[in-house]
Length: 358
Image (tube, rainbow, N blue to C red):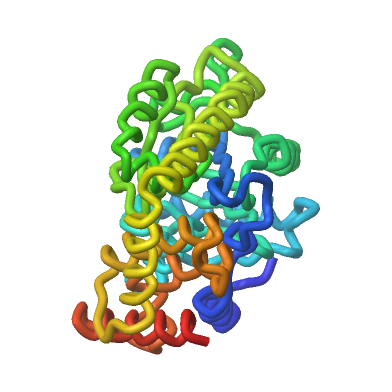
């Protein structure tokens, strides 16, 4: 594992200029499924949970876990980032990139994240739990993502002892994660269901089978850009495979629902749909100032248009990347320093014109 300082700065500069592999729309069903993500919550046995850990204990945990992770097979391909030492722009950059949670960015004391090549793997240290392992892949890739994170979890557990109860399973800071400690999430782009207000049926159906529907950045976030994360709510009393099978059964039904509604929109409201998508492209390629919220809304229309063959000059991968690179911290990182809201809106418009008109 590489270390802090100059290499850490280079890592973040590289992130702002490039695109994670999960954004490249190369996985199964990637016309609708942006990504599949699995997180595992783990705590090191013999150490207090984070709410009872002072800075000395938190530092011990970070140092110990870095050593443990370095000893795994993938340790040499991982980069450690000292989150506690970052400024606000860099912390938010990692949140926008889905590499850390808002909770880790906003908490206090020693903490960090280990990032793998291509951004498939990130391991948060001292978030709500001591360890939050995350694996992320493009498209609908439940089994592939599970196999990778399970191998990584086993490799870590062979080198350290996680808090575990024979009856309850893995012990976690929040009771809702006790048991398997697993959170399986699939991020979907569902503009047609939102346009026709059918999305409420998805919410209601998901709740009945203990699935949560959240926004782009998880719990508490809104469905900006028509992105919806579908994830399990229960972690206790069922196996990891049961949870994977549940998502594997439900997600194709939602995809089929979205596609049927898209077909109906094309059949019954083609002129209105063409106009909406053309207006979105027109604003994105000519505006001189544009907010993040409006950008997300318009990019959602363009992404729908690309999938329907109405915007042949743009790729899905480009639209996916623009969703992330037009976020506030990415723009400021590319600019080289802080920007006020009005300045960001101007910079965002210029960036969109450059990317979409080239």
